[in-house]
Length: 101
Image (cartoon, rainbow, N blue to C red; front, side):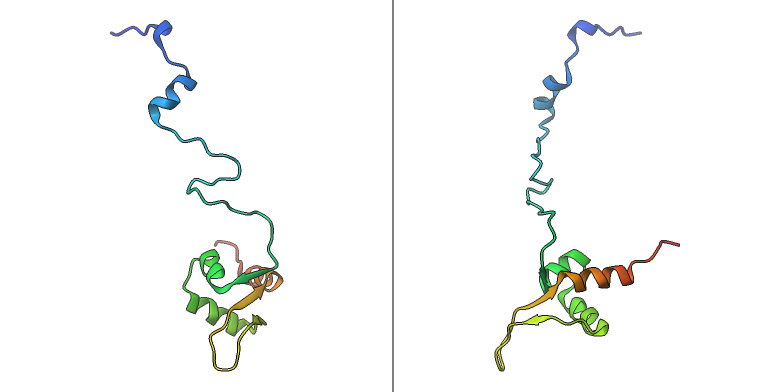
């Protein structure tokens, strides 16, 4: 049977450099990205795709089926940047959020 000599044990602060544990600041997430916790007034289509974990096409389809109004900066015949109001996003999320059964 082995005995443990408590005088030779490392403290947790002495072990951290050995384990190569990275300390995160409050404003930094584990992936190194800064996540702003404030509510923004508008979301872009790619932001909603990331938020809802789906493709941009699925975001367009969900918005179209819900009859959501979007802010559109299009010119005649050109591509455009579309923005969805945060209120619309929160209403859609509340409408389709269900309890797990």
